[in-house]
Structure formats: C-alpha cells, structure tokens
Image (cartoon, rainbow, N blue to C red; front, side):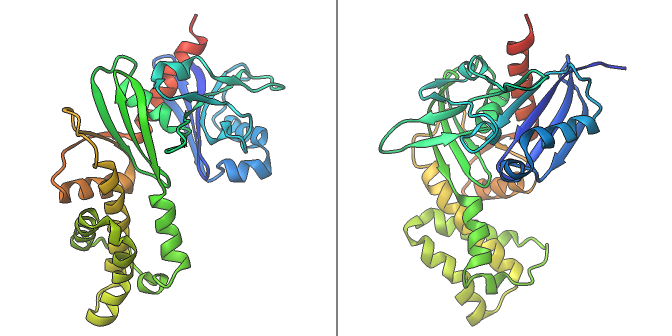
Length: 304
C-alpha cells in the first residue's frame, strides 16, 4: 500500500476540502464539507481539521499544508501576503507555521495588491495559479477564476502583475434571495436555459453600464411576456457574468488567450459565456490545479 506523505487542505470561506497525498502526488483519500472559515471560527480550527484527519486515518506524524482563508486575519493563523508584482515561487517561501500543534502545520500566504486605486487581495487562488501554470511559465497570461469572488489575473513570466476581484457569485446569491427578483426565480427547477443565459451574457457584455436595468428586465419580461423561473434565473446569472467579462476582457488579450480555472457548474457556465462572445479559452480543472499547487509547495517546504 502506498504510504501518505502529507495532508493538503483548501480551506475557503464556506468550504473545506482535504486530501491525503502520497509522495507521487496521488490522492489516497478525500474529505469535503461546508466547514469553511466562518464555521471553523466558531467550532475551532484545530477541532475541524482533526476530525477530518482522523476520518482519513492520517498518521500522527504527517505534516499538513493549508491554503485559503484559514490564513486570513479572521482565520486560524494570519499567513500574511506576498505583494504584487508577486512571483508564484514566492508563496513557497512564506508559509506560516501554526504554533502549539503537535503536527507540522503550515499555511500558505495570500497575494496583496497594495495599489490605492485598485486595492485587492486573494487567498487560495494563488495556489491554483501555481498548480495551473507552474513555476516556469513564460510570456503573458490572462487567467479567469470563477467563484463567489471571481478573480481575473494577469501574469508575466510566472509573476502576478495585476488582478481584480468580482463579487459575481455573491451578488447572484443576494439578488436571487434578497431582492424583488427573488419572485422571478421562485420555484425554479434545475433545467438549464442556455439560450436565455447566453443572450443575457451578450447584452450585459455590450452594455455593462445598464447592468441594474438588465437585471430588472428578468422580472419585467416574465410579467409581460411570460417565461419560466429557470429562464429568469439564467438571465440573472448571465447578466452578472456578462458584466464581469466586460471588465475582464477590456484589456489586451495575450497571444495564449484566456486560461479558465474552474470546476463543476461554474466551469460549464463560464465556457458557455465565453462561447457566446466567441472567445476561446484553455480550461484547467480547479480541483486538480489546487492539488498540484499544494503538492509543489509541500515539496518545496518538506523535501530536503
């Protein structure tokens, strides 16, 4: 049986993912839960981590490497930031060690953009970038990373030059639950309305200044011309993603095009959105990217 080498953890704001990894980078066991930073802050970070480590039967001596919001100011141990322009290699050197624990537990730093006109931060996404692009990436790259807080990142020769965060996912949740538009999507089934979604993406991309008006259109169109709650939901989703793409694609396009780091439904939605705009993307699975990034970091930290 292959022996485990370390435990890798991606600890987000609302999600927790843990993998038991061997020296070759193979996943031996996996755990997922909704015990993200917000939940763990109440239950206790050590208790949450230990419960999952026990579930995968990790040996007592095994080290743990964490990326994401566990390293935030409100997290377990503040892991600090690497300032832009930030070489991806820099995150391998600035992992913070959690004191008072029997195990060797390290938390990777985030990236900070200390620009008064465009201040921004990321935690977790830097590890995905490392796994997706590697340390030897040459040339320019533009990366789209969908999520609750989507990131658009410009890199040159493996260094993060600039990035922007878009609250697309969180806005979609708020709009569909907390506004008058919740009436338009009430009772929506799981059926996908690709036509409505892509039409909304195009409309918002072409006129992002009308975003608030386009959002209300999902309600007024339903009242005046009919339409399903699922179509309204897809219209709202497409509108918010279209506005994001209008900003993300506003700069120069690298020769290599767009790298899309995403998984699951988000990967599907953003592929449809880019297709609607005739923009070619190179897809990278987000789960695989973060595991590769954690593996590279673990090798740098613990391999002598």
